[in-house]
Length: 84
Image 1 (tube, helix red, strand yellow):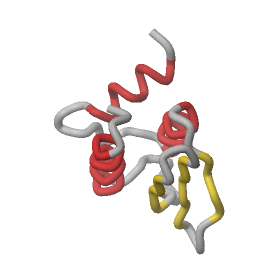
Image 2 (spheres, one colour):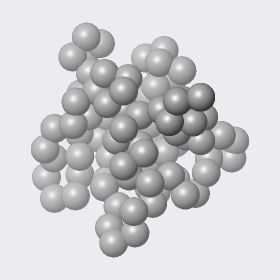
Image 3 (cartoon, rainbow, N blue to C red):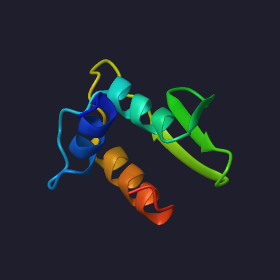
Image 4 (cartoon, rainbow, N blue to C red):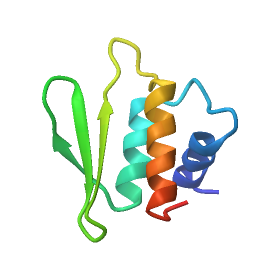
């Protein structure tokens, strides 16, 4: 199993995992075709050109773990655009 598949399964686990690292989330989104754009402050935008889809997330600090609310938003977005 690839690391992207493992990270995607971790992302979609029920209940959502509380130890998803920012680098894992970023890697999964980039693997799905998203490009990270610069946001303001600690907000980061991921854009998928082919589907004209935008995800806005808050990059965590100082902890590397992504907030569960962000994870829920990303999962809903990926389901809406039929990535998962």
